[in-house]
Image (tube, rainbow, N blue to C red; front, side, top):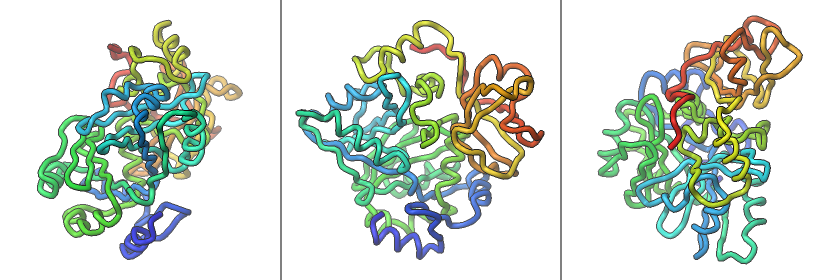
Length: 349
């Protein structure tokens, strides 16, 4: 992390919880702020890979599940990178910045993703660099966010994944239950703009942003579920992260076969658990009538504003439609399924 940015965060009164995450107040209190008002979230759990070179578009087109040719200065793109088995290694946001591409992904999988991507460069005119010190991410969310950003940067995008560049700041509209935006810029720019950025916003760590991802039905691939699921199990084609008409990429045949053969047997579901402890990423889920056989796995979990934990989990569709689901023997570990903001049966173009 950039030293000046780290010092800035410490002056806000936060404390470091690990190598790169600062926490400003109790996570559940921050989630409550996101559920009821406007927040400015420090997204230090995200990292950025900058991709440059004459062959950048061709290289990325041959690696990711979405059509990179559709990424422009005014449109970012959700995509995924799969193993040859068609399982998702990482999910990422692809952003255009002048002649470069920015890949926004969880910092927890940065090193392995960067190392493995570089293996495929070969003779291509492509450079992949960790840009996480020179570029940082902030999250704006809440009913007043659009107006606030329009005052600061002359415009705020109005449709999901629409992008707008204002000087050194790139903003992307993200899906959610209310307006929210991912902002990317240098630490110096954000520190200079901080008084206006933080005006009328509750400054938080990254927990409420990840909770908003859960509310949007947007999964995050972290260690524990890497290389576990094909994109359809994570609803990624429903979220616009898979293009079935583009050319080949790692795992493309399996992803396409899953699509054209019919109904996906496992899907990503949103649920709530009354327990206070955060379940482990990748923890098994069981059906109440068969506690010895896993029928799903936890993908991500964050504190709910009113208690318990809100989660996203990949679960067998048949099991999710009948009986009770749980991650342990006690009643408080039973999953209460909640509606997603999109249909699991929506048509795919």
